[in-house]
Length: 109
View 1 (tube, rainbow, N blue to C red):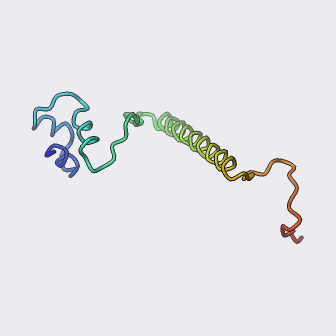
View 2: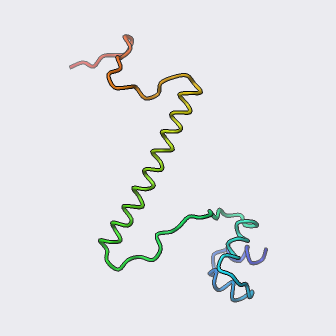
View 3: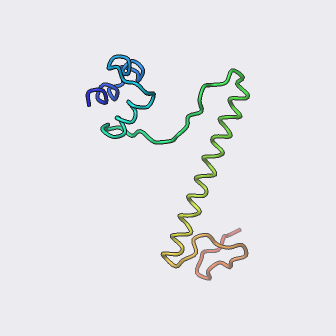
């Protein structure tokens, strides 16, 4: 618990704590933080790793990662809409060529 508290204070690095307490393994401190800590420690998220020397290559890598996340968000929103439409029995997204309701206000030119 003292290892977790010390790590969560943020004044020392994981490597320093491992050396101080003689902890082996690269993920032991983070595993303990996931179990006993008060902060969120997500599993399996890969960072972008080390920055590239070429700024253009790094920019492309960052944009590819952002695009990947945007695709995941779109899939999540589509599933949310699908579930909501099914549960509520309504159409949230109007289909192409759908007629407007006669009660809807018309645009003035």
